Image 1 (cartoon, each protein chain N blue to C red):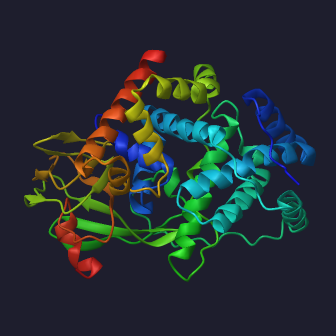
Image 2 (cartoon, rainbow over the protein chains, first blue to last red):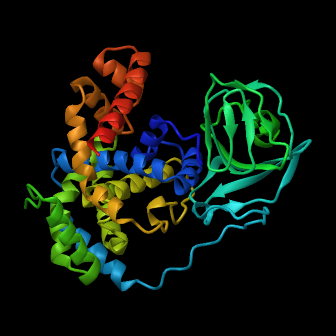
Image 3 (cartoon, helix red, strand yellow):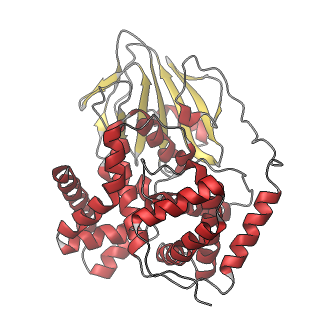
Length: 217
Length: 191
């Protein structure tokens, strides 16, 4: 049962393409497992489709169709010659990761504080995105903190709770600077999440304070 | 030579897409190109691209329509919606390439991900979704519909909307939130 979903604004930005690549992939992980949010995105994409369909057209340059046909010829002639995509290195992090992460690089677990480990997630198309896996041992209480901007955290395994509720597998925690919280991981098992930060802001959020030094802050 | 088509019905668009996917039908592709390329160009310009960049990305998008035709599934999305998502991803890709010197070959594209099989009920919804969303937009108060349309064109920031409409930024944010909530409500009621 998924109890925490991305906001309408976030799904709207996912659909129109303005959500940054880090948060985008975290939301994609959520949507891959949440049919309700997949439907909400499909609606916003349909809004994009109807805006495209109804927009006042603008003439393409003369000969554009011939150019398109020439590109198709070139593509058809070169088919099958494409080199296989380069695979990014993937460490075994001990759980089966969602399919949407298949093309991502996954770093080994590294210690960043008592009971907390992290692994860098590298996106195939944007290596500057701040995306990471986080693993926190059972029962660990994190320091109370606020957020400097938006942080998107999707729970893959285990659960944590704070004043806002309990976050378990499939839940997405979208926390902004209004949120002040002190998450506690459930006593009966470790918690693994994938998290992304919006922009290159100073990290002070969910696990941000712990990982600040890793991003040279 | 004017190449753009005046209109294209949803079933006709599906027929053309299917012909491209199944038979690599170039006449069908030309039909899609005539309708969509000029609209993609307009759409991309409205999203903040220069005319020549918009022309390029419209071309790129249409080439991807050819390459990915076999992924098109009328049970999931209408042709306009599918082409919109391809253009959106091509635009993201372009902006990313421009923002740094290194070129990365293949973009992450959720539309390429294999999905769970579609149930019969979902299939019906997919066909009607574009139409329903259009209906819902018509049912929204005018200023809410306008603000949603404006904010959909990603390149326009909320503060630019605030300037254009002459209302404070905080009001734009709450209006977008309100409009999205209202749209959701209307769509739920339309079911």
